[in-house]
Image 1: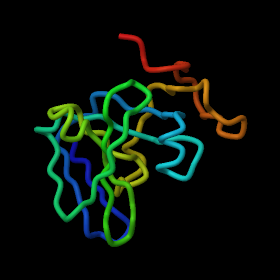
Image 2: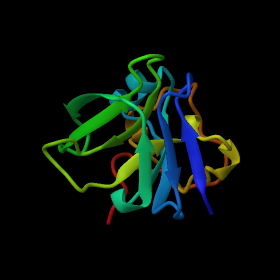
Image 3: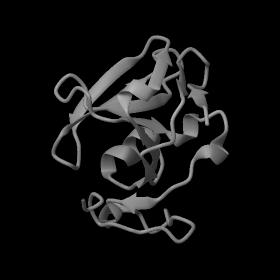
Image 4: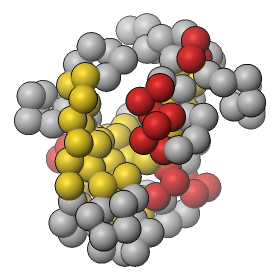
Length: 137
């Protein structure tokens, strides 16, 4: 399976030749603010499986996990396209935001996380596991 996508204006593009390691909805306040929605829809991949082209800008903040989280966005259209651990946590999985997929049907969520901060109007459809924080390992 090849997964492709990019930003609204097309300047930032990605291609992935691997199945996602995980996928789901995150209801943490950071994801809500980054997406302008009640959740972030994400898919995780090993960095070696992801090819990204185009210029991006990075914003880094400590996430709900307590670890640095970097989000990368297009400087032209402002679309948030992907995230990782930034300079402080290199090699961490890359999370692609599902709204940037060329084919949104390739997103198959497996869990909802940080549901303790989910707004009442942002209910997830389907029968997937729900976690008040991160997925337990």
